[in-house]
Image (cartoon, rainbow, N blue to C red; front, side, top):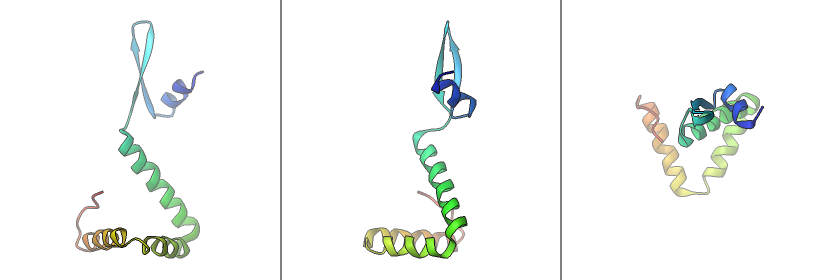
Length: 86
């Protein structure tokens, strides 16, 4: 079994017959994949480390004023019931 067929079995790729061969197509875009993986990673870190993880994140981001403003804007939009846009 090849790496590609294993990825198809896991739902990462779609396997399409193309003549005597198979063509593999990604199920999601690269951006969607990064969003899914980062979301899962963040959920895991928060589940394992909770308040400590949040404090560390804010501490790291506070060194970058542009990122800090971006974070404030995201929080404000969430508080106003707006969608979380990237």
